[in-house]
Image (tube, rainbow, N blue to C red; front, top):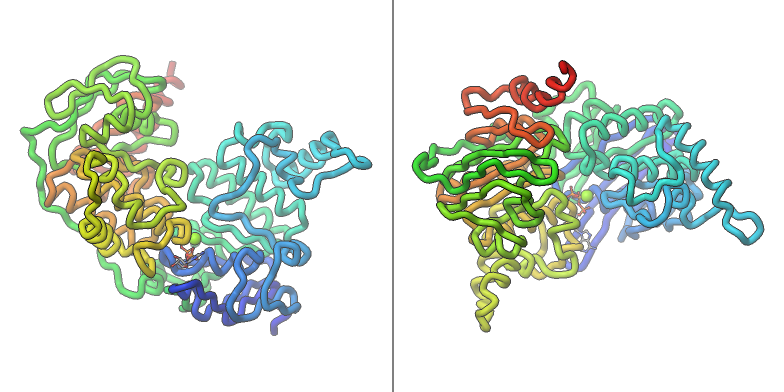
Length: 504
Ligand SMILES: Nc1ncnc2c1ncn2[C@@H]1O[C@H](COP(=O)(O)OP(=O)(O)OP(=O)(O)O)[C@@H](O)[C@H]1O
Ligand SMILES: [Mg+2]
């Protein structure tokens, strides 16, 4: 029976001081299939697959690769046995070319000299095989995240990987990039590569996978055949309870008479003449395609990039924050999209991370109020269900999604009046999403704050916003009130500028 399986993880257990990341997980991968691995943030998905590469040594359990049994792996063993992993954060060298990254650690040599030409030729062939267009000489730092990921995949295939494990590969990608990634994944399956695919996006799981393994709290829950399963069932298996509503209800708490922020003809590098109003207690959604200028807009408001012209009126006063520091002092917060890069300080504790903006704001205070800090951190741990043994845990030891929750908690704790969320729930599991939505509701409803939310997830945009403003190519192309929300109308406005150009 076992000969059908290329990889078997049996009764894997992994203990860390104070945490049992995996209690007893079994997963079996068939030859040539795409097996989805799903579970809440902190369920143990990344830890489990790291056992296959030797990045994590299991406390107990067996790893069987093509019938060969191991108690743990090493990177060398993994590679010899045809296993490759595309990690949640990939580790390429930005200053080297795509070709050099492809051969990182085992360059082609001519005598003792590294043969750049040969590597470039090989890389070109490898990319072509995957139907991807990348110049082998291009520096990694000049490639989009999507292409960087393609290089990682090509590298795995170059090393003859027959088992490819992908940890949330779609999370950093734009929707067009996701499409190309799917094509590559499907091509690999057709070539007989067996794939484990981790994602929080259930529509991807349905599109790609043959079977699904669900884990919860470090324990194996169930294996399902994708085409015979229901979304509701998956969610229930993942979160352990039924989730009846996706978006928590919110009472009307908008104060139409109080405009907290008004933009008048705000112009930046890509953005042109953006005018909009945000009321107290309102959640304003910003829709649009990737590259529409939404991130630049909020970065101007946050003082992270300079405006060229136009006016920002905040609480009745003209403002022009020259730095995020100034914006924070004014009571404006931005929860950035790329939280790894901008947000989390990986080497410090959860408690200190959450209290960070408070330290900065009240830096004149010489006494740190330990009790208050602890209770603030506890409040956000509980409301967002941050999974951790204690609040002194370092951020880097948390699962990817839980790191994001800490960063969200940090900005919520900063007593800001205007909070801007850029893609707030990317990489966050369905259960935790609901908790974050509830927190956003509380912020406007109970605390009288105002929110601007950028989201590329149409459902989320419509589910959470009071009003949606759509941008295309740096301009406001439409404004929708709640009654007017439909996927079609948002898409029409989002592609409006492109259409006009075509007509001309
Ligand atoms: N080095 C470590 N030290 C202590 N605890 C750890 C360490 N690595 C992982 N953990 C804990 O193990 C658990 C499982 O984490 P893991 O990263 O595997 O989750 P995940 O399912 O991949 O979640 P996500 O969807 O958020 O990426 C978490 O509670 C995490 O805090
Ligand atoms: Mg993970």
